[in-house]
Length: 436
Image 1 (spheres, rainbow, N blue to C red):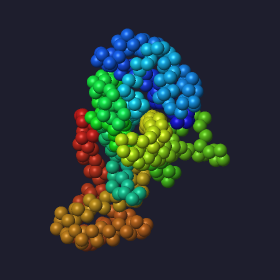
Image 2: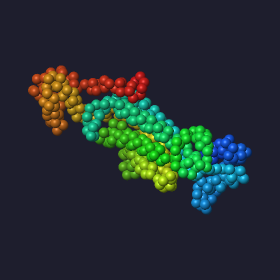
Image 3: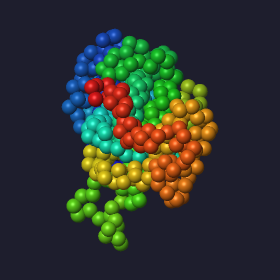
Image 4: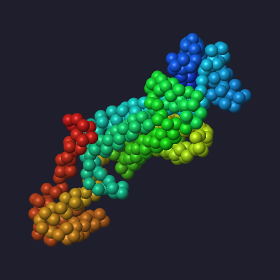
């Protein structure tokens, strides 16, 4: 995590103070359950909770102990014992470090997912508003980067809205995937800790019990979580790339907001660059890069090893913090995106009507012309217009073979821009599930 791409609420989830507080909650809930089961004295559990809840855990002190003992959970428990006193001997009964570490990690990932889901909602609120604003704003659709047929800018934004709605559903599934708790002891057999302790801790921490753990929670769960973050990041990149293309000087159909006092270049005062969108493309690469190590964490030795641990200490905060920042930045871009309908119309007309070639082709087939013949008639005129040898409608009108099948009035009817937008309302209803 670096401050430049970090928002405070997400960063707080990964702070040492938060981590140690969660560790204490796990230990305290486990002690409560053990006290109810008669495993430890109820007075001990009560004292652990009372003293721990009111304590401020000294991060520096824990780190100092860890430098000596070379074990983070032992260091924490030693510090907690300094706070609790003699009753601390009843802490961590039958538990292993992974019970604390894995359950804590999953709590953090769940909290991070909640923020990411809220981020998507904020982004989609902006996308929906701008989509309806430009529902019928005509623009050219492109395939292979080449003018294809007309669409609307609202449909472009509605497409993104639907994509991020799918992303939100995936994030919810990923949240559910990692929302498990393991308090099963060494190698996961519950030999030293009653399964009812796990059930109690899981309920208190807002998690489900892990059906079977092997001292660690299975890492396929985490692989799915980080893969989902990678997919959402890919969606961010797709939309950011679209904005970058639309902001090119030769296109200029939309551009990022350029604030008062902003400078686009140290050398060229005229520059207005899509720097935010470019930034998002870079951040998306980073988030996706964390998917591979998460997948590699699935295969561990026997019941456990800790080769996954160093990976997760890095990728869990970095991936969630980066994606949180990227979603918020994209929402801001969409909210303030400058749209140029006049430029969109100019680009629509740039090829002199060639974008209506399919309508003419289909009209000829409806008149009985074989598709291959109809295609040849339209294409030969289209290629002349493409090379600048004439106006496409005029070339068609002058084509004797075509005129045997289509009158001038019939031909002109197939250059109506509004024809392409007859089903925009239908698409909007499908996407937004409400009266469009």
